[in-house]
Length: 160
Image 1 (tube, rainbow, N blue to C red):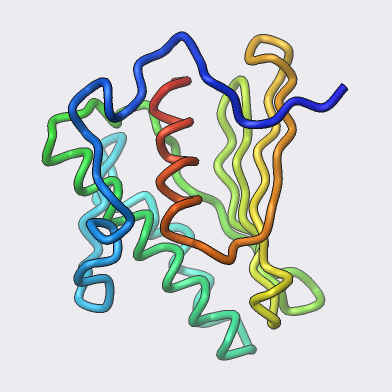
Image 2: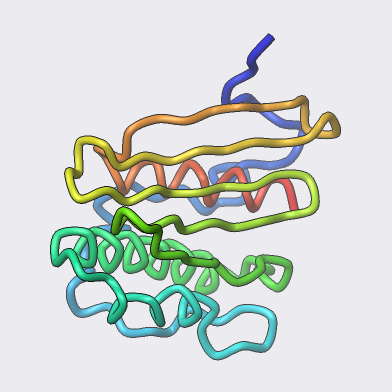
């Protein structure tokens, strides 16, 4: 049986007074600086950003930059609301042989990833958890990047 994104016993962002819309996350994305700070690092997205010069396809590079900017913005909003983000690891990135990019967060009980393809219609996301979190398996297209990023960061904050 396959499970999909589900409610957890943990508080959601809105229960913590952190509700915001995708417009909050999309405002000033182009001007977003690298201010994502977790685990004592100056910028854990920095690790993922290092691969951008290795991406040969300009469309893939643009999608990766856009996704990382959304993640930066969402996390910065959470930091401003004084949410403890110290348990979120660095986002890892890999350029695949076909030129696509895999971005992935690996946690003890789950992993969340994004595959960025040259055709944005084939770009997607995935979430897989262990039995502790109900063997969740969920995936989909990355068509609405802001909303899915908010949902996935909410899942992270609810389960770390």
